[in-house]
Image 1: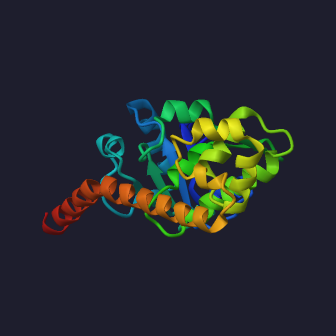
Image 2: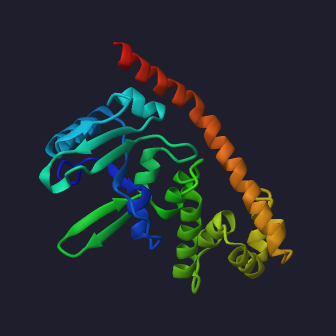
Length: 238
């Protein structure tokens, strides 16, 4: 992707590894800029990887802009059987230009660099109906908290108050920063429980919040799933 100057951001389980919330993943998940020029660069990169589409929908700009993921399997010997999933639009996640402007660039020995979805954007992208994503959200925000708690800035404190899913830590942050907590409580009503000191009630409120978010994701994906079924049916009958 870097060789062909593809505007792409690593996300998914492999991005979680960079943030200290390890998750094993066989897939490489990428958010990309969905425009004609970037898609042409992406096609060249996929050709180098000998990557072939493995599922619906077809690899087309309109499907990426609609919110579908496009899936590939690499046949190049150095990436044999690696699955690459490409997306451009995700529920509740900012447009790609904003994601790119606040990306994290990870530099490794040997002048190797990776452009990664920022941690807050990665957390938002993982608010899905899948069971495996919610423990990962919890670990990501916990890791962010422990890495920055000694000298946090206002943006980091707001992020913790809005996204922490660990009752004990959320109560600590709510107690340490009551002014910010009160300001954010209309956006996240369960913060009222974080200041009460009742971990059991807060845990129940967190479960309800997760359940509501999962329902929103199901509703979002319903028309897209119907389109995928139409693609599959067309492929079977065409």
